[in-house]
Image 1 (cartoon, rainbow, N blue to C red):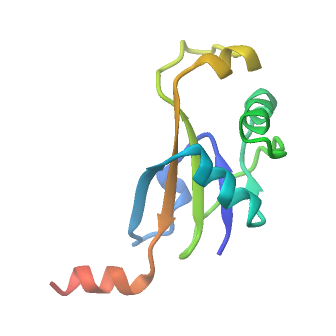
Image 2: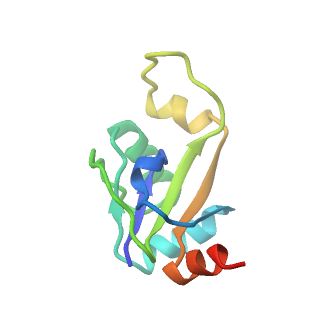
Length: 119
């Protein structure tokens, strides 16, 4: 099981034929998950990583990588809750003022898929 933190979520991150649970989580749950587990940052922009590090009081490095989630993995998504202008690069101060939420994306076990196919 891996824990990842990202500022985006894409269907490309999922294995084929998977079931995903997505739920909003509060900042304290994010801190607990990251402090109590090794995690991989998938935050591609250094300013976003800086804001998250400050917000969570945890070192969240900038790490522009692609990931493929598997069963048991958890992805914490830092989601800015508004659409930005095309091509706009924000400063850390600007990011910190935007509305945001955290979501937890979990890949559920294979037996869940089988149960759904046979109902």
